[in-house]
Image 1: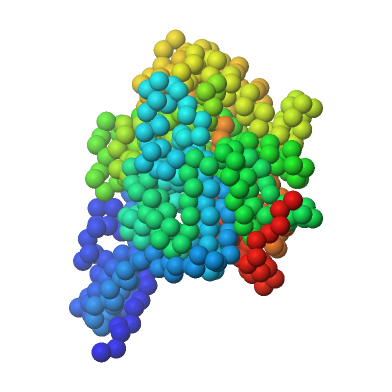
Image 2: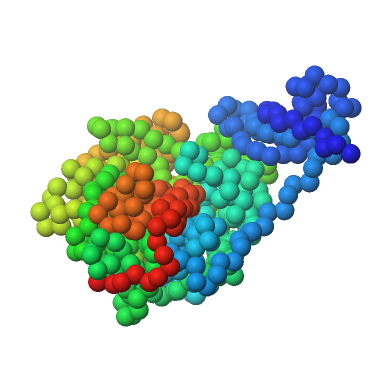
Amino acid sequence: MPEPTVHTLDIILPLSASEDVEAWKRLAAKQLRKPLSSVHDVRLVKHSIDARQREIKAQLRLEVSLSGSLPEEPLIKPGLTAVPAKARRLIIVGCGPAGLFAAMEAIKQGWRPILIERGKDASARRFDLAPLLRQGRVIEDSNYCFGEGGAGTFSDGKLYTRATKRGPVREVYETLVAHGAPRRILIDAHPHIGSNLLPNVVKALRASIVEAGGEVHFQTKVSSLLKTTDGKRIAGVATTGGQSFEGDAVVLATGHSARDIYQMLHQAGLRLEQKAFAVGVRIEHPQPLIDSIQYHYKLGTERPRMLPAARYSLATKINDRGVHSFCMCPGGFIVPAATENDEVVVNGMSLSRRDSPFANSGMVVTVEPEDTLPFRKEHGVLAGVAFQRALELAASKAGGGVQKAPAQRVPDFLRSKVSDHLPPSSYFPGLTPAPLHSLLPAFITERLQHGLHLFEKQMRGYTTGDANLIGFETRTSSPLRIPRDAKSLAHPELAGLYPCAEGAGFAGGIVSAALDGMRCAKAACQEISPRLSRAPSHLA
């Protein structure tokens, strides 16, 4: 029997009818100019909500068959073929999304990936969050930033990306589904896994890599690069524990918080470049307030079942600097993302249900390299890192230690007034009233104040006294770029070294980091394979 012809259609329905399959069929028949009786089967393949008007609507993409049942959706399986033990070795530093997807790409290219991660595996890492949350004690190589899965593992798992031209986004989603992510991420316009589900997905990715012949080494911290005798090519890495890992190429996928890696490269004389980044605060509202603003109903009304916790995205430019929301977490929590004990850094996360009573988002201002000039004389190209660190130290001091964060009611920040009390917050270590307006550099404070006034006009009620500003959000992206050749993707001064993803300044977020990891691994394997034998490199 021949396969039925499948039509792909986009339809718009009122929210109340968006789950009504018969309504799908009626609109499909109308678009195809066929009688309703001829619509045999329909399937939802994309779903988004349009809440711009008072009447909320759902935008749906359907597959429609007029001549029989639609083909069953294919089972999505990992599909890695094991590599031989003597295969060429790709050393991958960092076990975040870039590192994990680089490892899987290496296996597809017939190489054996050796993943090196300073932190612990996802299960052990979870236990190390308890002393951070309850005692304010940072375990410096195992926290919200470091460990299996990278910063994304316990920081939400948002998958939305605009990086559709950078590679096969659908392949990334399908790989995640094959390893336990909900199939819904293939449908939702703003897919999200959740910090409660993502650790198991990450562990399953690691299992696939190991089963196919890869290696994963946890609690293994890179301290230096190994080079060939002529000094022109990388030959592997050495670790603080005295181990050496030799390979034919190295993918550096360490994330934006591995500041010691920047220092290591700088001391080795490799070129680094300053780049723009953003810093600011976390803004936290009651989620019902954001729901009422975004969904156009009176505060106190229960959110309809079919509507998810509302999200938002805000952006403007003030005096040549961007001011924007960042990593918005509906129904989420604010968490301590410090990597050292004398600093306070905040970030946001959500569980898969997104059912916390709070909404939070970064609210940040662009920092250009020229804004870090006061740090340039002492720190050189690392001035941006020093700028971030100064804010993190100030936040720790103002918060009073043990990861308490300085905070201010939004109206008080707008009036440059210390708050005499603070609204409830999801931030577990606790908040301390503090003058964020004077702790932040003036160019950031002034733009944040101006930006919040503008955003109030877009979202009436946004600057409510029930909202907190919590300091500081400093790890939005790397303040440095580790340069690479546009064509080969290798560092221009050291052959075989492939700077990758967020830590190298080339990606932001889980999906774009995964895509960059795939690109770098493929570039390394294909550039090296034609001309290197399997013989071990001679080390300097």
